[in-house]
Length: 621
Image 1 (cartoon, rainbow, N blue to C red):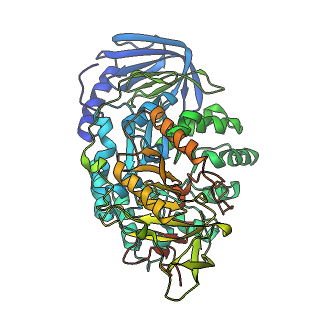
Image 2: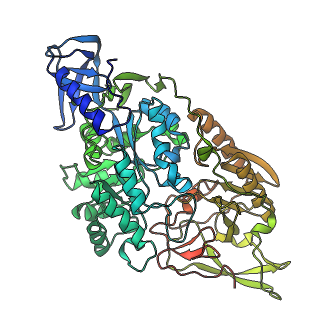
């Protein structure tokens, strides 16, 4: 490879030197490193195939594209893939890499062979764990040589609401510093706290508008999260506030209304088929305001389904032409995120990131190239994964300075009472009012009642060292099996430890297991620690191959299958019986949630608060 400025991370000074060199290579006045000849190539700008094409590569970039044999300059090495069709490397317009549970270098090894060469990382997950080191965390793997490009967007939800606190705080100054520090930073991660955007009385109003202001200053993109916003006044207000996109639209009608108001629609697989089918029935022929988004997908699901390639195949199965579906993961997200100088097409100046298909109709991937080199054969990742010694700020993030005990989870009753009124939630409880129920009192404490589907749920602060705990009763989730509890350090979006259990002792035991391994999952069954999954980096990710993590998860599922789980339907269509894995998402505090349980805070001492209005209420009375 020709010695050029290091463009692992994009910066303006080196970018000029690189492009001055590429200009001369394109004119044939300097030699190229590689000519890759392909059977045909998709121009995503015009949605046209070109036969028998050559891609001339210098360093990690493309210098020239055109008919085979037409390039006049010298080339050091030539390769041919005449039986393959070249399309640009796929991009993720909105993804939380943390939800794969892999550190960035191992995420690269998983998703690159499946076509994903660049990702806009919605980084409020790790930001909430360690905000000050967030940018360093996301750029470390690339600096170590990973061919996967990560474009971080600092999290607007740090903290998610004014009623939460922890390992990070982002406001105007932090956002301004991020955007000025690196051209890799694309904008502002999804703005989720809609009540704080529209309501000047909300305690997060100034912080969020300060971040939006700082993003506008640097011409960054303000990403949106308009979950539950379906009335026209709210959609118009959301767009007027400067939000550029929404990835939360679930129905065709919602997409039509939001598209009409100028929002860039980022479609996720769970609603993709219905939306694409409806848009095609509408006669939509301009798909430039659409992209396909993964948002959250575990490495286990990626091994089973695929990465961005899965999203494309779902869109194609719904009737979208392959060429349009490919635009939705290449040029469209690159344009939206203002990254077209570097990614999104097979064109001069861009990184030489290519997906080589042996069958376009099924999106069968034969090879993936990134940074001008072949990095996969089918789903086998060819390069060595960089060895990264993550520092303590990444690996020691569970700060609970004491052993938790059963007493931490007791809910005391008032003296002399046989029953107490209790406030209850259930997973995905999107109602203006919480549920109430009279629960029995025994030994001075309010008790669960599994005969009525009631168990106990708690949030344990993992940041202060004190293990502050909020607890209440939940309906229709958790174990009925005695002395059983499930705990996890991934609890979107604040990532305090959540735990649900049939006994206070089992809940303490599960949380202590999480504390000991610095993050992950812990299942206590009938008083014994039955299974764990380790997320030692940020309490969210692990520095291991996907196959190893998946093996641990499968063992957890197998042990979980031996537990009797409570269940009843909720407002979410993606809440199902059995092992309650999606409880990790039921701790969200963004729209459309109202009443939630968070770690104790000055504005919500018991942790029970309506995040739309700021109202609090006792857990029992």
